[in-house]
Amino acid sequence: MAIHYQCRHCQLNLGKIEATTLSSTQLGFDHLNDLERKEMINYDGNGNVHVKVICEDCQEALDRNPDLHQLESFIQ
Image (tube, rainbow, N blue to C red; front, side, top):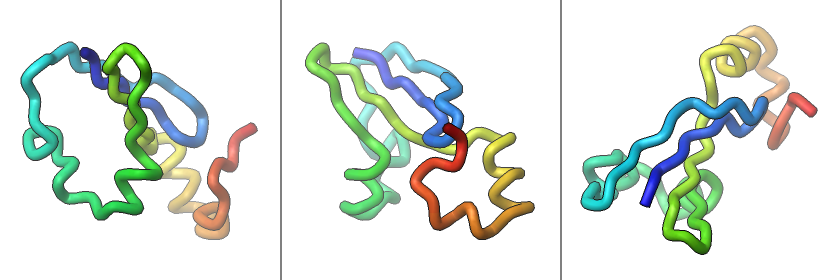
């Protein structure tokens, strides 16, 4: 099992954790509400976890342009 982190806007692969025994608490998923979990965390058929996050570049763009927060993804 691997946990893959990818930017939800630009699709940049930010990192991967190869682990079999990490809990949702160790990963910080317990801080997310049900809606956030549904939007951010997906599982594939191989048991891998895919987590949508925001990279630094996209976060800076959001900080400079608050209207972009309304969009699911602002980079096509």
